[in-house]
Image (cartoon, rainbow, N blue to C red):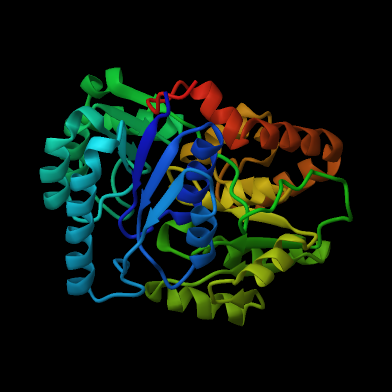
Length: 365
């Protein structure tokens, strides 16, 4: 019997993730209806979803990138009504990210036996409290909680209590290509990396301030490695941006289109993810898909990922220049073993394999 699944991400907040998940579910024979939003970016992902067998897409203009707050709220309310109307056809209704919790609480109260809540972060980024009340309320309603990493599950249980463990499942984050249809790029030797690169949205918790210390380092200058920070910057970090530029760091403040991103991912570079805190990183799984070597801060899923795959030598012992240089030296000394470990990690994070192994509440065999 075909499993029928609704995936809801009202603002298309994690659209690259949504696309890979929907594609993997469809490949295993599920019928999937995606409820999301048109956005200023990533429209090709919605188009790609529409071409998948057994998949339909409902994507009005909800996102703040394409609609005012008021119009977006009205469009989301109308979409929730459509979801509720169509709900008898679904075996599972899976919320990826909350957009307007009071309306969601009402709708999912009616659908609770079919309601699966995916938890990407135990609390929203920048939230100071131990518990986020809307997240807790939705978690109580759900018949199952689905976590994108074991570290996120453990953080959630620590914050909200052991009572949630019995309905918790982990479906690890899978590979995430820069654009639909790109096959994983195998890890290969290549030339000696000549740059350290941060890529992703530049937000306060991402820790790019470390690049200022790197730019001042005589040891790094002696290596001749360029420094780059690539991605759209948060407004509150403009002083940091100016400082990095003044120190000679190459700063590219923009959202990269697909050709520019593919060009960046083809460079001979080591990517640096110096996050101060994080649950998991979509950038990590894009770098993994494209066969890129990266160094991570020891936080959340990033630290767990590196340990799980035998890559502790590329895990920062602290957020310092010396720790970064230690990781670079480790890669140079153990290049073949590191590349083999990354290749095994890439193979382990293919979506079909993850869904087959995870024992998820999607009901697929």
